[in-house]
Length: 564
Image 1 (cartoon, rainbow, N blue to C red):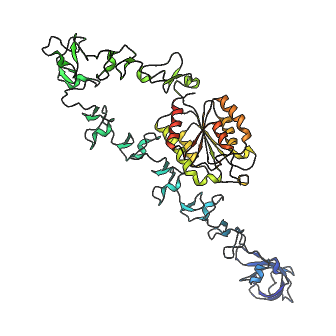
Image 2 (cartoon, one colour; image 1 turned 180 degrees about the vertical axis):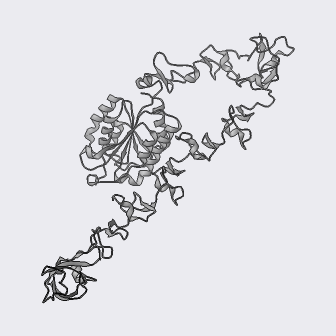
């Protein structure tokens, strides 16, 4: 750029003014922070300076002068003679200069911002994009900061939007939704936090705390709600209601407590005490009156007359009393083992296992880890989930099944020591890129939360319909504990069918159980090679053909009837 001739009036240490002619090279101009103008420092040579004029205070014949140009022409700034972007900025707000395509210049801090976003959550100064009382959120929007210790804002228009999929906002915390009809979660870390101040969580309902020694609150609008099904609240205690015409409950912990002092409860009636060891008094004018309907008094004992050929009376109040110890009265009026077919133990009946074996479900099993812990440990659980984009429209079906499994585990107190989450995608043939162990934990709540937060996307290797299920299952087996239950979710066929043999060998070596869930429908070819391989690798559940409840019952039965 050629020089521009400018006539300047200079102010310095002189009171007088002098006129000088300057040639200024504006290509060297820079933005001056103090004045906000484009300036250049130039040397000037005075012409015939008088001794008492402008240069009288300067011992040199030359002087430096800063020349500033206000409102420079557009040709000057756009030609590159002076920078167009202010200092400390990435871009120019008015022109948009400095940002790539798809980005725009933020008016708040003159930084480049992705179109459609209010802020950049990855920036070091992310909150500077927002108003002073707002913060930058992970979805690149600005919003109110949450109170300390909160996961979500219960006063927002959509409080659940702060939480992972499958969870809801309760009392500024993200939690799994409560079962229908429940006011609180008795399995939560702090069940009472769902209730109002001064209330407690009881059987998934919020109630006032009971007085010491009481089972129920007789002053509650519904006092029987504190009691188990069939019981009623009486004198702040839960008890079975008396049948019509009865004075007492012979099955209560203390039947005589219903009767006046000196009397005893016999066959739901308060009567004079009998001789020791007797049910009835044969000396009484009506000895059978001591017995229940249909019974007779024989040798001071109430018994049911047996039909010819019967060992017991299944219609008697205590049919098993006719049978030898350890047997029970069957419907055909014969005595036999009380255990169900295929069972070897039942702790509720007092039938345990020999030696160090444990009663799991209804069979005696050797459980090494359980014996060291002193309690039954059920098999570890592994989810292996297809996260390719083809599954994305059906992800709610997968999340619905996984959340029900997690919910049943917590509801039934199934004691699982280890949870693992493995995802597989299709980046190409490299198994180390395709398969990721997302989580390894003993916390079932963390397991449910991370599973619900999985993202679904496809990559360059996943342009065809078949996925990498065999790679995901192989890695899951390599990382799983022996006797683990491994549940795989996908909707299509698989590549790498050559991995079938090593998968089966590892599955059998570790004694793992494999379930393959095709949900909501199987998109692969029915006569293709994948489906027969799936059936050889494990038990296949096509949710379209067998409903989800069948699958959930199978998972629960395996966990409850096996141990480690």
